[in-house]
Length: 561
Image 1 (cartoon, helix red, strand yellow):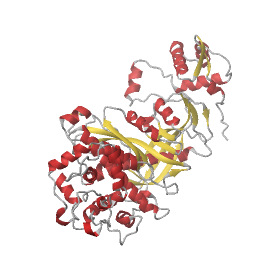
Image 2: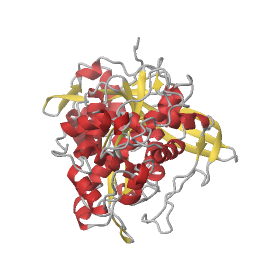
Image 3: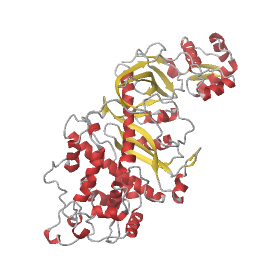
Image 4: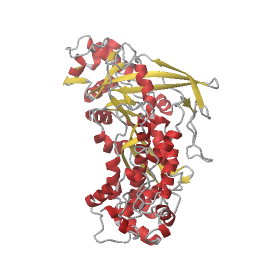
């Protein structure tokens, strides 16, 4: 009804009558979360009130969203922000208990559904910095720094982290997000106890991937099964893999990368050494091993993909905006799991609509990169608009502002950040007493420095296993047990030998004799494991041949169109 709409101007006979729906607004952000959408969500989740109350369900949704915008204020102070533009403070002033009961009556379902409706890619295909070739770049990552009140109900759900210095002060939950790197908007998110692995949460987000996307991810997502499931979504990926992995070399490409196979998945491996020169003259070296489904070295050069992988860090910026800019380091309010779910979905919803408002603003100036939009400016302007806007007035102060971008977009465009400079700094634990027993050596400078030079050197495909490192405790334990490496070096030599006659059957003993491998019994076990991985085909007891997928490709050249 028009007189119940938070952004509609009521008819003149109703101007003198206060409405219980008046506090149901979010300032200028109401344009992205209109009352029609909220009412539809309430109907869908069956949380709409059965009788008209002084605090209707619609008002409750906007109140919970406002709590996300003002995390450091109490219930009555936030209510005061929503009703600041009304005469005499609004139709009524509820008690804190009434507002708590309103939250309990709503539950988390409408806020979760509201987030799912606004989540998704934000930018247009032509927006600067959101695509690589024909794919939209997205990234997975997790954040385990969201603290919740130390209440027994929260501890029963989330537990607490035990360190060498004792128990952590607050329980924390793990937030996993799929982020559009160009805009830092959220395509999807899940959260729960930190006792579950990041890949467990990430698998819940895999259905959101499709063939129009290129996924960027860190080393925690390089398990064979996860890579296969990701490829089955149709999306391409560029994922960093741990240096301990020694994949077999199926074919060496002219640019130094090589093809391999993980189970039934054929991928390309890029080994690169990056050297950064900072403005202070320091030189920082790092090594990256990247797995990708982009197999054509002509269209997707290895150095280009190494530089593209750096875009993965945009998801870290999204978490920074959520954890530090919006929450300002505060602990969440709720003392039970249902309230935490409601609060987190509200945080994610408000974050997403702020990103939408920012992208709308930068897209009004073609060629502007969304990286230049300031999240802090958008957040503070949205807070101001809640206070300045009267829901009953309904004009949202748009008379003198551009219709498409409003006050938030105008403020964002007026405070565009300069074009991003390449910078580097150390990742350090900023705490007086670290929970980690020893801090690893960090080659990067402690203070942020501009990068004046960047060199990417591609390393050749491995032919022999790397020498054991005296600094690696795993290698030291292997040396004590007299372990002899039989990793990628033996494996690559074996496949080179078998490829000389792909149809021939081989026994481990004759292969070990030809290649002069000392421990033939251990090598036989290794060949059996390669057969279980699908790299070899076991044709009989102790008899192997190359798998069919490996016979179609030579080991010295690749015929890509």
